Length: 111
Image 1 (tube, rainbow, N blue to C red):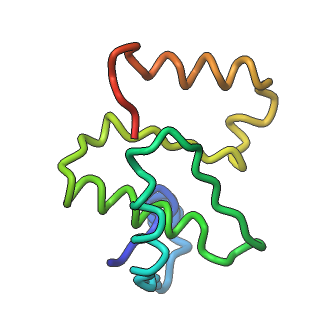
Image 2 (cartoon, rainbow, N blue to C red; image 1 turned 30 degrees about the vertical axis):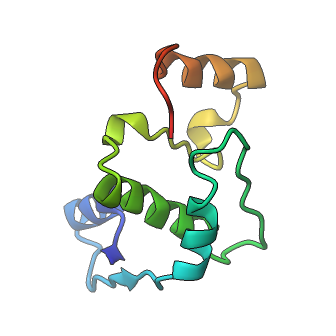
């Protein structure tokens, strides 16, 4: 699996500052994925913790990909937010809750 930020790549090319593109390879972590996937259909909240830059977001991307490919989960049913983004900087918890709630139907299961 390979990924690169398309937005960053686009803006770098547009500004003419991109000289070399480095594609980062995600290291497959089947043990972590399988342990987390065992709890996907349970009512528990799943929390990934770890030091900065240890791969938490990468594992989540792998889990989302696995859900899409192996369980045929539509992308619109996967809710994902990056709260380290400045987009959410001034947002309070109630606003975050309302935003997430607005993406979900009451009868729809969320993955």
